[in-house]
Image (cartoon, rainbow, N blue to C red; front, top):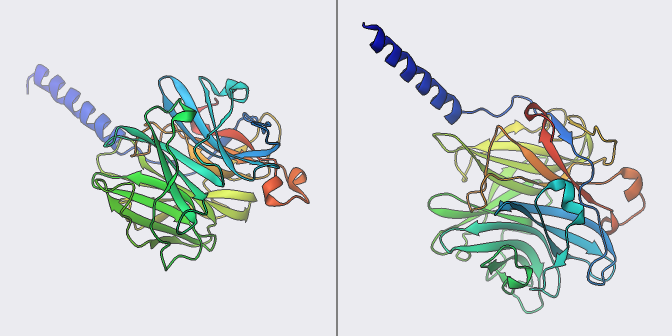
Length: 344
């Protein structure tokens, strides 16, 4: 074989190997994290004496982070606030605006851009005496993510509560090529999934089915992994009383319909806990709780890069929550960065 042919063959082989390597980029065999210092702290807002800021959902759009969180307060038990900033070091200084589109209970937001409708969607759990059922998953839309006053009035996503579900909370939507999938938990070791065709979203949901069952608690968040020839999905979900009062387990699946296989799903081999999350700036949390990946995309696919995993999460010290009801725990937000990817 002539030298030019050999060189061309070698170059093609290298490109093919690189393409396969990128397409099948594996998740780490063992997860290790570095926790930032607390980046967003509770602050009083709109006449509400705020106990905590928690349940973060965040997207990157037009060069800025757009962060939506639950606040718990004395004058109002639950509300959703919006912050926008360019860099996480400036997050706590960002203006906080309470979303005005719902006067009562609403919390645990998820925000994404739904490409088929060319609109931003806010998914959350909410209640209203005018709804039947009066509590459940709800949605609002907006043409602009940076306009807190632009969100439509919340509307329920179900016409009736499914008869096979006793409790439901922490709702999360992710879409594949054909359907939207709604995941939620029920505080009894179960994660549930419901689906609807994309052309019927945000309504038309099927009867929920159990997607995952085990020693899990709440706050499931599901993502598509970037850079694979075949689809693969990762869900991480909160568990209790491992290394830390709250911590995360993780599971993967080839399809959003499952089945879900454990990835890092034991107390001693967890996705993120006090055992594998270092706090180099000083210990400020005894829990790794309700978190959200910093996504690669802002759309309904909820895509993340397995080579650049970062999680914004809520934390609190045991001594600061001692003797307090759950609603008064002073949750704060920080960011976990996968240690293999360096520090922030």
